[in-house]
Length: 203
Image (cartoon, rainbow, N blue to C red; front, side, top):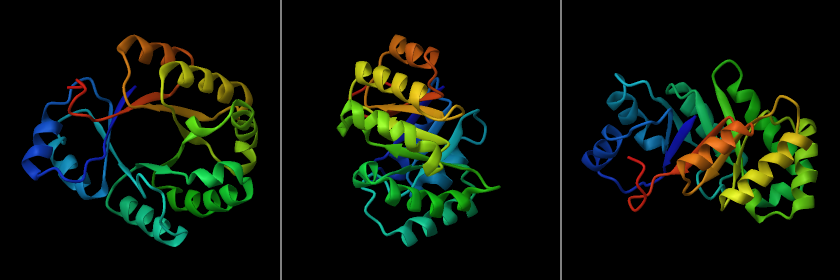
């Protein structure tokens, strides 16, 4: 699956509409909460699923504020939410587990929350330890945020081998070639997510 994040918050309604209407070969589009309703209206005749981003990209809000934002997004009709995890939590499994226990129940019967893990900053042994603890933490859907294709491919292998059996894994990269996307999907990635950039031809 080909997914795109549009995380710009300074687009006018016309600029945003121009970007949306020219999307091609996109299965899922993730937008900031302020653009969700407009995206839904613009794409109502298209076969593109629309998700949203919570506490993105800095993940600095309080747990209560994040929980409220997720609940509001589900109320507005969002069914697929990407939530970045604070980097400090990647090395503190207790904090991570407490955070996940708060956020997961909000999605029950309403949709899905996938946690974005900035694993590009972790060493290999730290990635292995994280993967092995995901089942205890309660994560079933994650996004591995990587810097380069080779890193993404190797990290995917780690989480496929050491993570929970039924873990849904998505890969997030800034840029990617079509053949690289196909390799990641063939190796078990549920989808590959790229970020909209006016200097990168995704349209």
